[in-house]
Image 1 (tube, rainbow, N blue to C red):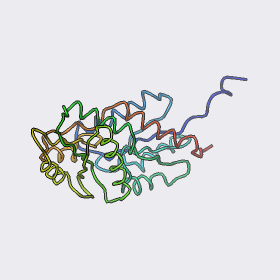
Image 2: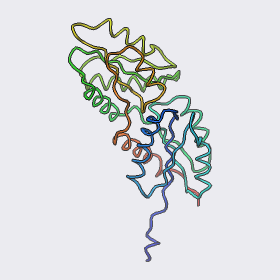
Image 3: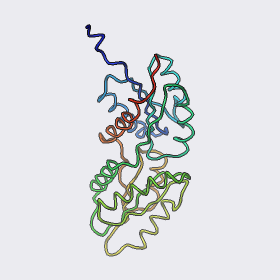
Image 4: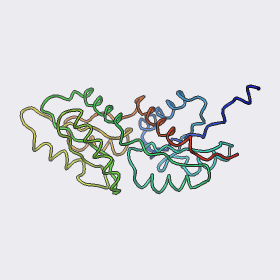
Length: 243
């Protein structure tokens, strides 16, 4: 038999789809995830897409990738929970033969690990009160995902963790910070764990919310690349491929 007969069929393309941001550092942080995927899986076709602010739009990328001959497309939402963009924008983009979306990045224990590391890097100390700041969504499933991460972080830190949202749900981050401050004792501080992938609009609002300390967003981090590839691998093997 020839080597060609033993060659594995081409894998579906991976499209990493993020929200999009006008923030230069935010764009670089998201790009670090996509570039990390390319570095880990050089045999894969990996493309970047967005649901807002930036181009190209996810529907165009899916269609163009299939048009370029990819046997299939898996869209991995570079988003931390389900919500409108996953259930509407991305779902519409993969409403094609040989295209499918994976689950979003969260909840995941590795996100909790990154949050704990960011808090340690920010100098979390005894007596500090922790607020988890998430972007927020009106989708009930998104709130459950954030609550799962908050519970995991609470267990990791062995202390309570409350939640504040940037939009779409209550309490908003400034209100959560104010409530946390009322519970401070001694020289404790209000420390916000930024449950956001990258710098941008929501992180800027978190910085303005009145906390004493705000952690850096999650990206860049190699564990995010791990999660993306796990999401892709959960879908790609069962994806019907075009001839």
